[in-house]
Length: 289
Figure 1 (cartoon, helix red, strand yellow):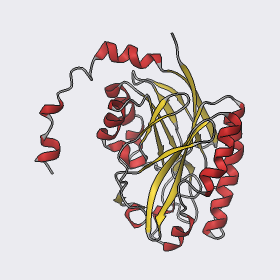
Figure 2 (figure 1 turned 90 degrees about the vertical axis):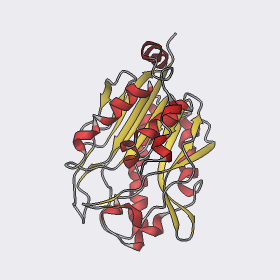
Figure 3 (figure 1 turned 60 degrees about the vertical axis):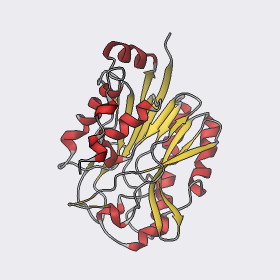
Figure 4 (figure 1 turned 180 degrees about the horizontal axis):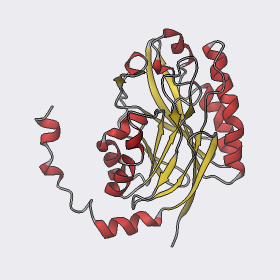
């Protein structure tokens, strides 16, 4: 018996390049509202927005002014978008810049259930600080909430954010905890890692027998223009096959019908979880760097 869940990813360019950080944040929220409504009108069950959806990717510079757009989670933005989740009976993954307290900030994704209820949050675990222009340690403290799995109205979902995708332990833990669909909201540019975009996560989908949805913003963001965000948001199934992929340069809602029954079929065939030997892997955390 099939168990189909309609899922979607939003990919979008920055809406405003000039003004205060607060004005830029509000412009980006306003840009997303029609895209969220489009997803709702088309019957999407689970919607994921891109990494820190309400701003540009400001981590390409180090400037304390961007601390000002961080907010509590749950807070103003999650409460605002919860109304859309309730209206459309649509689960929402909402990546934002979180302020836990003054001077302590996280790269966070909140989860709101189909009735508008706040379910919890994930905080990005691995924080990059690499050339060119990914100066995230200036803005984010490493996540401290582990890898929660959210039992939503339609599926059990897990989240890991952008750079976390390079660490296969993230997907493995979430799958072992029962997640059926993993979401990876991202902000990644052409060049350094684009060749990995459709390599790593299909492999992780196969290794763990799960669906994965990965989204990326688009375009050159002024005034920095340090790299082109190439979109190409996609869903991949437990066999590692890309189900649908977005464009490299268009704002859009990328949608796919995911049959969760496929998870059982793939796992019964490969039996990777049966054949795991976790007692043999202790060196990875006990002895090795």
